[in-house]
Length: 409
Image (cartoon, rainbow, N blue to C red; front, side, top):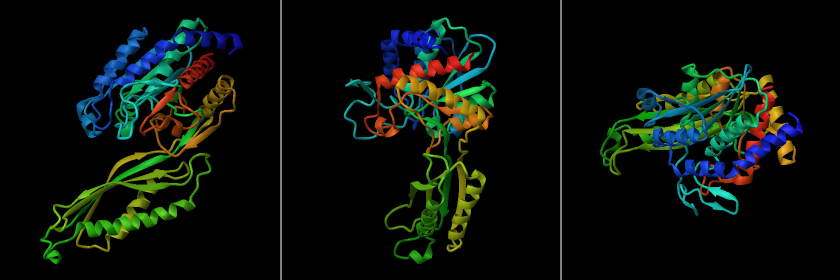
């Protein structure tokens, strides 16, 4: 786009800067913690705010059986569609569910307080900010009068924190969208073109309870679980020898994040369960990784033949890998971000996983970009005192608006 057109878009964005901040504040003030994942009310509030901007909002209520299977209480996904003319469709996806606040906040996690030009609150950075970024970028395009070809869709979903299957996964499975390009919520100045996949397994070890005075009459599920855990940790130590070629990814990781079991202090535990998270780098094949982890568990379990071990897959998220179309989006974003921010913006990978992988699995080119500082650590994403600089919110909106215009020529 020409400098004059870019300046015109900047002016329209600046005109509604205060409204954009107020829009984000209302989202932050509406709790959407996941778990428990009761996200119908925050979706309703977001829809009201979008309609206040003049958008027509589709409300897609996910059937309760699918919601329950995903471990949530309620999910309503939102789609806004605006067509400028014949041409490609660009979808922008951000998620409105958030991790619970946790301890250590110096500000109300639902207060949206603005201190020294930064808004504090759970979801202010990840990723309610991009509800505001994407909505006000589209608003500026609508009001700009630029001659554009194609359409923009806003996909505002509410299950990213538990995997995305009833958010973008549902929209794609139900054929509610078929975009040519996708930009998904970001969290730093960098354009993210690749990220890890992830395997979640639940391991259940069943033994036989017995009185602690006669432990040999039972089968100690915790003893067997401890043997399996030791094998998994030994396996984890070997993962450091594999390093992804993608900048920002690093090595595969394994974490046991949840464990439960036992009856009482004086009873041999008859059941122990734990859940593990295995991050999958782009060079790995998810199915092969799952087979590898299951083999480690089975080998360790064989040392405890009286215990019964069951392994259940909870999640298998594929890595995000760039292709020619996604790199085109990346190049446009980097060009526009350099112009707005005044510095070279890298394209890189990140070691987490996001909803973007669901679009990629559906065959839709996708990258991640949105409001954020230079690093997610600066924003305290998923930590106490999560925050977003309002200047970064404005800058990201300008970058997204310009990139949309470049894609819709």
